[in-house]
Image 1 (cartoon, rainbow, N blue to C red):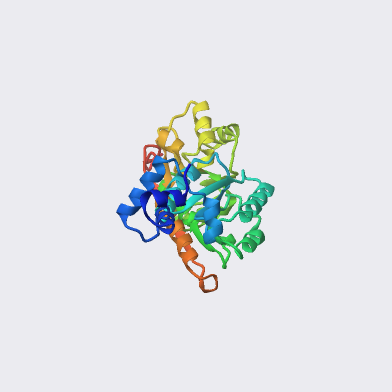
Image 2 (cartoon, rainbow, N blue to C red):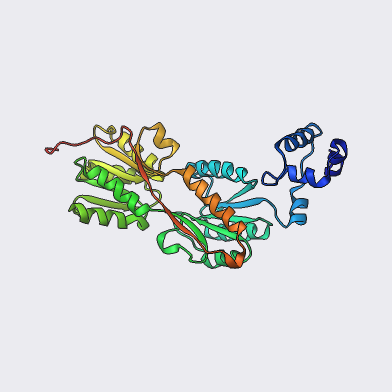
Length: 329
């Protein structure tokens, strides 16, 4: 398997030079680095990251806690995050909390027990339930709080939030400007503010024009019953309810967008396949910002670090699922 000393001896370089070759951020000539890495690959040598961590007090590893594995949005985010971390010479280790409050606490405790250089915590849609534990962990390891709800931002911890309220306003205005007056919204309570804002600004009635059905999952039969009884011209839903909404529409032998328009908050693989207009996020930009904040925090002395809080905007990705209505409809 070889060793750093053996590689140094075989290539007639110092052991410290070999060690630096495995750190992308170290100062070493490109030619020397490539020569060492190529030889290490040839003899099947892999550096012991735990030994390196003990020696340098750095694991070059960032832990990431994700609410659950099924959400394809997280998959895309993690893809870009891993790429960005690699550019700075860091690895990524991911664990999933599976939307359980107890499991979430276990994940936080588990990740805190490892020698990570930093921890990225993605807040679930239902909100953070362990803010005190997160603050406690942040005393010993750099923490980035990703996607906190407005009320859950912790002053002492770096954060990147999505302007969900503005995103909901953008989606609702998109429908209303295209003549839709009866809209069914399927989503979480925390984003209702955006609906109230746009309703007030555009002069539409929440009682008559916009109906809110709350929940991360709404049963297709419940949606179908509402459609039959109230005949909305459009449905605006969180991505996790897209499948339910689409199933309800098809079960009623209706079509999108001829009979009813459909728009999603969050752009997933399913919305892409079904060609559904969506409120989207630039996950590559979010990931790059997250990694830059983490690396910046790691370079700061703990006592000199000033927490940063960013809010990222959304945009509409137009497809073929929304029909503009005439004044007579």
